[in-house]
Amino acid sequence: MTETDAIVALIALFEREGYARVEPPVLQPADVFIDLSGEDIRRRMFVTQDAAGAELCLRPEYTIPVCLQHLAQRGAEPLGYSYGGPVFRMRPAESGEFLQAGLESIGRTDVSAVDAEILALALEGHARLGGPSPVVKLGDMGLLHALIDTLGVAPAAKRRVIRAIVSGHGLASLAEPEGSGTQEHAGLLAAIEGQAPQAAKAFVEDILSIAGIASVGGRSAGEIAERFLARAANRTGLPDEARQVLERYLAIVGDPDQAAHAVRALAKDADLDIGPALTLFEERTGFMAARGLDVRSFSFAATFARNLDYYTGFIFEVQDPRRSDGKPVVGGGRYDRLLEHLGAEAPIPAVGCSFWLDRIVGTP
Image (spheres, rainbow, N blue to C red):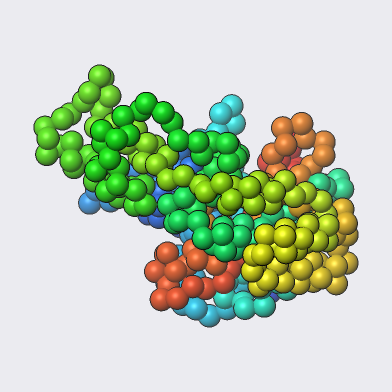
């Protein structure tokens, strides 16, 4: 089976389930990916300009383009979409153009049911393409956010915690560096702390320009701004009690039922009210079981996170056990705040997944 054949097979499956095929433009506004995608995509984008000087990029993934097209044409109307075609990212020792297929469900409020539906279709699609019995990894950014919020962690510290977990560095990376001149630049660091990265960088570059500083020690104004951003990110500490609770949470692994039991025990011991997020987690597991999925074979890990910034809830990856690199062949999750960031008047629930076709029909 070729990758093109795989797209045909997957689109037929998705359209059978009501996910109409769409094909957003290959050229996309670069700023939305810079602001809303993870660092892994931001640094791999192919960027260009139009005649007016506006920055554009070759489509690095499909979720944001599908969401932009949905908002422009259908607003908050609940709809499901499927897609299949080329995406473009710089990849070491691999082609920068490769084929992906996937589906997005936008606007449905039966959150637990549609989460289970997306995972079920991901596994059915993988089986249709001849993949072996897969390894399924689950996570839940919604549980993590609920836990951090209930602990009363300050917004800046919360961003640092989420960033540390998503990057795979863990809480150990949150230790504040010593002797780095933090006090000397306290005013500037306080001014940029909590700002969006692009806005903070522009602010620092403006300050350097006003001061007539083009470079210091061979570093450009942009590079100096990046260093100030990194220093500002390390200013906010995590209280010891919150750290202890988070460390216990991040140690939780097991199948979804085992994980739910462990999270309930943690919430009880620490007197934390995360009931709604945990109920959603358990409801999702129930819908998975109702679809005939073998939830006991799935592996939940509290540390599991995907390298896209817009995920807000359920996340998953499907892995081929024959691959030695651990890269997923299917991945997806819930992103309930993305469409609001893209211009919707209110949050719109959404969830989806994508297939790396070259990893499925190619040689492991």
